[in-house]
Image (cartoon, rainbow, N blue to C red):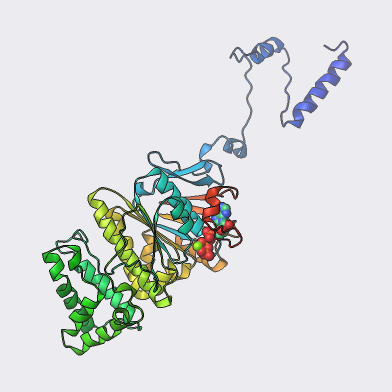
Length: 442
Ligand SMILES: Nc1ncnc2c1ncn2[C@@H]1O[C@H](COP(=O)(O)OP(=O)(O)OP(=O)(O)O)[C@@H](O)[C@H]1O
Ligand SMILES: [Mg+2]
């Protein structure tokens, strides 16, 4: 208590200075000391009516919805933290209108890493099946660690997958053959190469051959009756037409020539719920075929799983390999459309945004993906994507020179900046990294 008026004045001045430091201004309560004291006691009684004006910026502090959040309940999985609000991002792709996904970013931006961490979440939180198409042989340590199955397809390996495998659920229609014939056409188209694709007559002879080779299996669906490529080759020759011969000639390299890896009955039992197809050692031409065949195998599993009510996740790394070639791209676009209805959750990871927009058919893939992870982008791609996805200038900053594992997450109509760094000192990091210096031999 001050003993002189002068001292009191000084004390008040000092107190106001302290309050000022914390952005508060003191107001004198003339003739209201008692009410002031009562109001300051923890009684919940306010006897002082003070009014002040609030400016817009002050009010904005109290508005909670300036940042968007993604926090779904149910079987939601962790996708990192919201870089703005620092809240967790939890979402369940299977709840989306369309669960298809894409991961886009420059090399080294963390696409594969993001696939891998998603795979771990799916593996641990669901009972779904997971398939990986792995052209770089980099999923091996992770899949092994989770006791999954790695199927290595290479000209020298003894693991065989038959491209002509079919199951009776293969298609929605009565006949599974129509769809299979579509696949065989894409396969032959890729084998024959050329810009123009297959001619009408060639398509007809292939379709006829497909019908012929599946007849024994459809009559008696046991594994011995499953046709292989050499049956297709023979069925083409049997037609004695120049067009059929031409296709057969092209297939010859894959039937009796040096690229005959795919001319065998499937000898791996694809039973595991986590399966990676390692196709690194298939040469350039075979790799595309390999990816096409894997997609078809996975489709086969999707159709089987549907009858058991189980979802099937499919991760296609280096997706641009499939998009570059017209035929494989068209088949992938088809998969993107078909998978959803059958409980499939496909995800493609690619560094080439331009490939994704090269034709209206492939653009469908982008349009039919409700889950997009945008990692660091090159400036050209950033511009294209911003236009396509309506990104604001602020949002674009999140994918400009961002760190690995950081970027934008787009889920249905929500766009969030996210960050999902995986600590380097964890076991998970060690089995997921692709940096040569960090890759450990397991
Ligand atoms: N979420 C993350 N947390 C921590 N480090 C990361 C993360 N994502 C990526 N990295 C680092 O970046 C490296 C490259 O990541 P990744 O292999 O996923 O790149 P990519 O985009 O698949 O590249 P490419 O196009 O060449 O396949 C990883 O080995 C890791 O060291
Ligand atoms: Mg990668």
